[in-house]
Image 1 (spheres, one colour):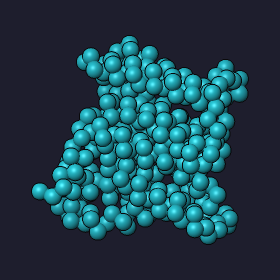
Image 2 (cartoon, one colour):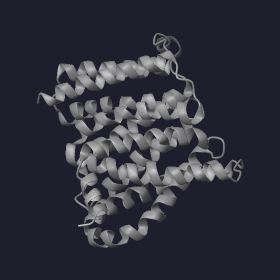
Image 3 (tube, rainbow, N blue to C red):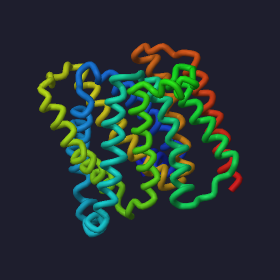
Image 4 (cartoon, rainbow, N blue to C red):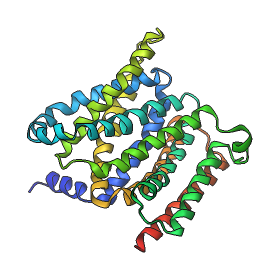
Length: 304
């Protein structure tokens, strides 16, 4: 067995490695999305992203799709929903949010997703929740609130959230729903799954991108704009999604969802290093609260 094959088999069977790679690339996605605002409109770049992913994956997916076709046809609504709401809606809203808020804020606010997943498991599946998990959830949400209100959480009750942060939190609801919904993913080849949700995401984005283009403000992106798109298509779109889906398959959505809390760490670091955003004291406070939340929730989960 070649070294490359051994490395591939190891990486695809090691959930912790997979669930670190995914948030690292998603942290980069927030930075790329911020850079994309200089060249792309949010709905157009999301649509082009998923179109490119669909084309890129098709030669590799055609064989598995043929074998899985009966299952795909039977479960098309579940698969379309996963792609449309988890992939398309999340990214449509995130790229829109990045026109109004920072990449650091967007990264930290994604830490709300594990708590949303836990709430879905509790209310829909009546899954037991320990008190430490509840405390962890509250700490995580407080960290998000501290970040979104620039260190003044009391402002939420008088002024609410700014447009960008509110849009991003709505995006998190959609991705949490996607993670929760992965438990109903049919038993198909991973490449069939990836191509199907990519194609579904593209279909979902068509009316939004069409409306945006109809406004007549589209301009041809610069070279750097195309490079941002290339990064987004290959890394956050394809590699990270495969890694995360496989990690959820091995560990389950509750435990895998906790690793989404690494997104704010990676995203904040990359935002500072790559685009020079300023890391404020309230960002640090938010991250500390988020990490405390994930620690408590993981400790509670380990006692089951």
